[in-house]
Image (cartoon, rainbow over all chains, first blue to last red; front, side):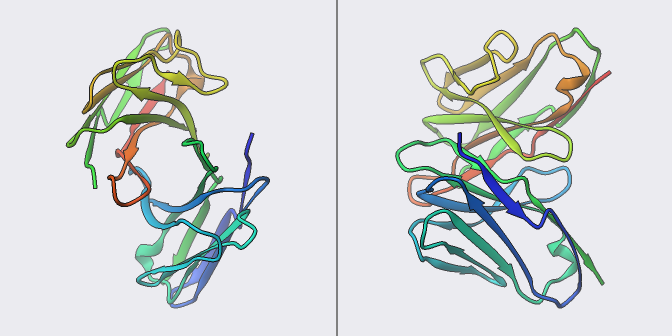
Length: 111
Length: 115
């Protein structure tokens, strides 16, 4: 089956720093999704990417759909304490609606 | 996008018993998805539930252990049967966001602890 490798698995950063995390897949995805999960909550969709090479922003967040269709990255600029949480990448293969999730990146922001 | 109400939000259950989790959506949706998130882990799809047909289970999940109902287009239940401590997880319901914006909306989850 499809596998997603997400890195890093955890990060400690100073408030105000930029953050980058990425996902790679063993196979091609048609759609990449980035979610954030706060403690005690379900994941919330941050950004959805639909085509190779696409670069999309949502406030301080920027995500890109890799040209090869096998990778994506998420950048967070000027981090703030409320950015703390677990960030998941997720991908959907062409013609199949199952969504595969990465293992998550746990982000800690030090004020 | 769709709003999901999931309950209970948490429960502590005795091993050998069963728990039914409810998922209510504020709009009609074709497919509903049930995920499991084990402690410190990612989300794993248990099954896809379509109204009017039997749920489709992923590898490693069986109907006898996780029976699902989908009586209408806004509601579904997942039962965790004959529970053991290994079933302690967060169980999440998910639906497509809407017909225009791609992506999936999740409920806030049910945190299950089996003792």
